[in-house]
Figure (cartoon, rainbow, N blue to C red):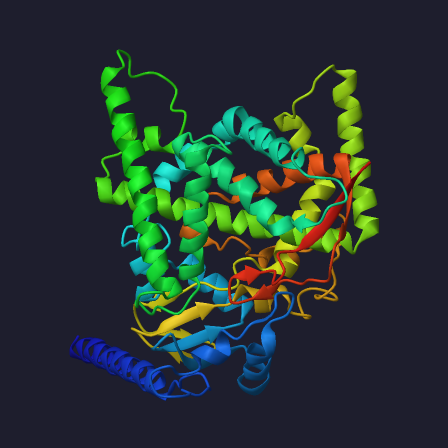
Length: 476
């Protein structure tokens, strides 16, 4: 009996020692973990200027090429005034997005928060706005309300074009998406004086968002802050009008025609929160969709084979509609635009409208033998993954056929993150694809186009065409 008791006690001692040693070993291994290789650059600014240096949007740029070649796909730097881990690694990018709110959180530079507002959905930590946007942009609403609106606004823009005269395709794309969004956010009609005035304020506002945060009279940032105030005044005035209308209504069951009404009826957000939400939604939805549309026009102009395939698809949709004596597009028509979706995916992959996002590390993370320290910034760079030759064949070539069902692979889709991913996946991604598909449908059936003068998309890091993408159109 005493021998058995001794054996049990000895076994417990061994287990305790083993547990102690294993804990010590884990701690020792963590101490041995090293930071990713890299450099800090200049005091204060670090390597920010090199990182943000303009380069062709269809490339990763000299800075990223040089750093990935020298340090690998995960490296450290000092960007935007903070120690930063930069990730060109597809697996780490997915890991970051999937662990939003657990190991990482949204963390944009304070200058962005200062101009978009502390309650902006872009800079706000958590998902306070997500439910409102997902409900407002639900699949039911996309089919019943937003699809007809997208088609109406597409036709308004396309029918205003003058044949044979050069104009900026980028500005027309921005006009289309801006008018569409202010209509669905605040029920403002296109081409009215108030709408045009707001659009011009928004142009000034956007120039400040992408400028250096120098708040001195005359600087783009200073002008943008003034435009922000003017834009918020318009939204606040619309809020007051809408609240008065709602008080006068006898029934509360009426259809919510725009996001402003929906938020006022169904949320408990404060006035400041609503203002920042609507402003940031206008920024996010208008800017990304318009640039994506301009990129599609640019890529297709130099790919006549893709244009021919698209025209065949859309003429077939048009033929079926004529047989059914229908004029407007419906959801079934949209779902038949299969090659169009391939073109949209390839445009987003090659053009990289959202090149990277800002995140902050909430606790020490180990990845591939590297230590990613708590408190550091981390930037998952999507562009480097989308242009990675180990993941995409001939990645700098515009090739929509790579997205067809018989050619697409799990590596192609798993590493494709044009709208982010995880809990913060862009709520308006489906609306954005709908906008592109419907606009291209009517463009391809109405016009052929050519560049009026050479131009190309550059990353600043926001995508911009230096000449505005000047084109000429001719009726088919």
